[in-house]
Image 1 (spheres, rainbow, N blue to C red):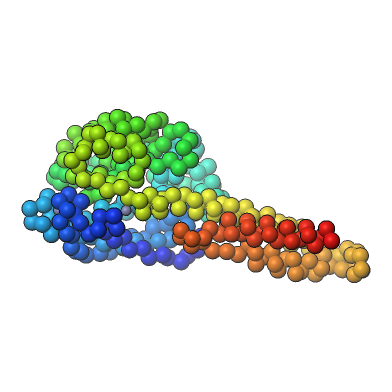
Image 2: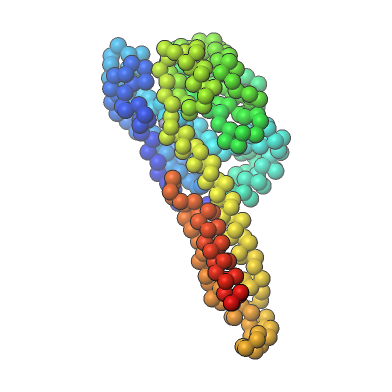
Amino acid sequence: MSSFVDIQYIKYPKELDRKCLSCGSSVGFLYPSGGHEYTDFCGKIKEIRRFYCCMNPDCELHAKPLNPSPLNVLPFKQFSLGIFKWIAQEAKLYKQKPAQICERIQDQFGVKISESTIRNYINDIDVYLSNQIDKRTIQLLKAQGKIILALDGQNPDNKGSALWLFVDLISNRVLKIVILESADHLTLYTLVEEILTFYEGELTGLVSDKQSSIVKMRDTYYPEVPHQYCHFHFLQNLWNHIEVKDGHLHKTLTKAVNNLYILTVSKTSKIFFEGIGKASIREVFREVELALRSLVKAGTKKFERLRGVKVYERLSLYVEEMEDVLAN
Ligand SMILES: [Zn+2]
Ligand SMILES: [Zn+2]
């Protein structure tokens, strides 16, 4: 992880074409947020969220500063929603202790997060799982009277249970977290109804990816409710997931190369080489060492290039070449 801070501007969702989610009128830009700096799997990010409002004076979202893009980070948190969810899964689905999670997240992703922060996040999650919602959120939601509900229960690995998050995109508050064995449309509908009843809010909009159970729920039970299926954010989430795995691949390959005997043996260590005589092993393999060290250097570019895959391809080619040379 580098200390470089990537600035991300969160604009109005492309899919909505600058139209109000509720009434379809144009929205106008209001102001940007002050900026929220947080850490994600790939490093530090400063997120500036731009807020908009509906220009139609008769609309319930008129004069409400709003950006219905899915959240990348929860308000006031130091680590991304992705990391928050990863910790939740480790703790709740795989029953890992804070110390184990701390070690694994550092080892796998190079993310430094203290055991006490992990413990705090798990406490937060436990509070939601046991339905003890803080008074401030309840007050805020009841005063607001409407909810733009973002559903997020991606499970790219498809390994059984998944953690589901329900966030209101008007207040940016987490309304519910549950672990679901199966998330069919009826289960999701029951949860959405529970949320609406509990917070006494009207469902103004739905934001999610295009999972079939969510689409079926919306079409069956809320055909009148405006919805936004976020392809871009869905792809972004998938990419982030792949990028994390790819980072692990890159780390494994780099480690394997760095641990090679010809790169680690002492510079003064000499053996007899045919046609050369007694010579330093490192000196004889210097060219190979330089080649390998440069082969493992690669960068990742969003939606274009994965450094782990790149390095794997290069190393495979290099090994093939070497085998050819040795065979002749
Ligand atoms: Zn409107
Ligand atoms: Zn989107």
